[in-house]
Image (cartoon, rainbow, N blue to C red; front, side, top):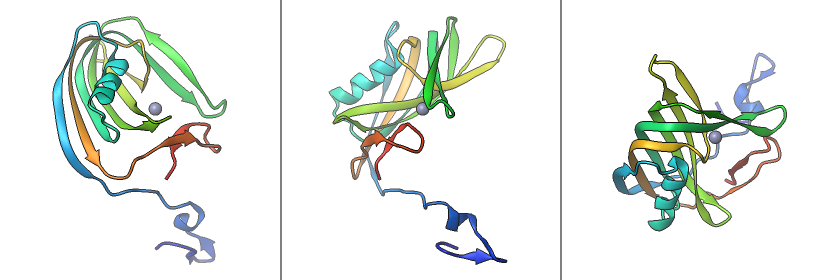
Length: 161
Ligand code: ZN
């Protein structure tokens, strides 16, 4: 049920929360390839998007890195805390999206890494993560542009839809 519904005198969750904002898109094309040894993982994916003029899409990757740099968003302080993992790690999963910020393609990706013992680390991918090997798939979507702007509630740069 949607809207100002109530059950037993209490408002339902749907009534108290704003509805999710979604847009319809279509998949236009898919790029698949590898990133070079020594490349910066986030910067390289962003460079591909700029070169191919990919303004809306999603990215997925697996591989390994020589070192990682991640961040964690502190919701109370409304700021990112950066941390480094100065070790060799597997990229067990990279999932991200591509949209626009300040008129340029921006890649927002989260990553899970694993060490030799199978222990996992994860977070928001930051510049400074160095590729050992990486196989990458980028899906390009047709549809309305999604533009990031400052969100007062969270302090994050979110889609203005
Ligand atoms: Zn993030």
